[in-house]
Image (cartoon, rainbow, N blue to C red; front, side, top):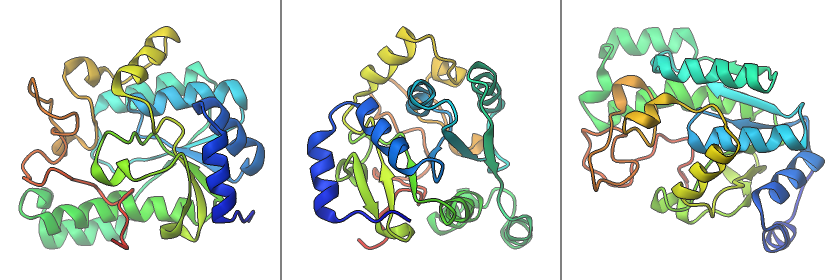
Length: 239
C-alpha cells in the first residue's frame, strides 16, 4: 500500500484546488485499489460523473442494507447504464442481520439510539469495513457544511479508522447549490426522492422529507433529537 506522510497530504490539500484535480491525483496514484463509496445521493452521482471522465474504469461500490428505497435502486441502474459501469454491491452478513432481528425486532432502530447504531453498524459499517480492508483509498461525497464532524475534514486525509488508507473528499468545499448546478449542467441521473423533499437519503424507514427551513440532514433518523447524527461511516471514533 502506498504510504503518504502527513506533510505530503498537507501539501496536496494546498495544491489541489478543484474536485477534478483531487480525483485525478487519487486515481493516478491509487487505482485500482481505490473506489467511490456511493449511496447514489446528489453528491455521489456528481462524483461518479467526474471519475467517468477521468478514468472510465474507476471503481464504485455501494452498501445495500436491505432497507433502501425503490428510487435508490432505480438511479443505481440508471447510473450503471449511463456510464457502462460495474457497481460493486456490498451486503450485510446475513447471520448478523438474522440474529439482530430475532433479538430486537425488525424496526429496532426506533426504540433507542443504541439500537439504531447497532442496525447501522451491522447493515452499513461492517460491510464498509470489509470493502475498505481490500483498498488503499476510498472516495466519498462528504461536504463540510453537512455536519460538525464533516466540517473538520480535509479534501485528502489519512484515515486512521481504516488502517491509514487514504480518504478522498473531492467536493468537501462545495455547497448544496454547487452540487445541483453540476448535476443539471451535465444532465446526470439522480435519485427522484430529491424532487420530493429528500436532500439526504438513507434507508427507507430512517429517512423522511424535510420541512421548509429545516437543515438538509433533518430527515435522517428524524425521531432522534441530536442535531449531529451520523451512522458511523464517517464518525471519528477517537473523539
